[in-house]
Length: 161
Image (cartoon, rainbow, N blue to C red):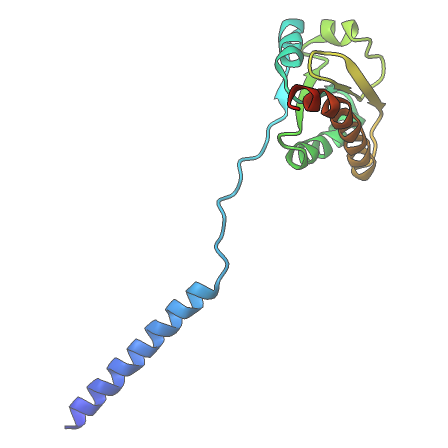
């Protein structure tokens, strides 16, 4: 009889512990799979540059950078973070001066870093020169994005009355 009581006690304790673990697990937030980070796309020549601007349906940010430029290297993680924040709203690209010196010269880049924003189709919208803090960059991009969205909204409404 003692062994039966001990068996029942152990079985109940195990069942209780099992039930608690299930309840605990059900109460935990579901972890999402980590989103794949957005990469800042490298552009190596003028044909690729023109194609990106022509094919894009969103604003295109081009970070004209150089491996020998200290402020450019300081700006890089900020650009990468903003690429995550503006995912799907702005396409983030970069042109490395040591890889595509002709392209940087063609685009009139004389100071490093220079970040330019282009509308779909290739019209330059805005420019930022130098290593700015991330909050200023974020405000600049949001302001340009808002202005762009306002400019295309009336055209979209006319198409869909």
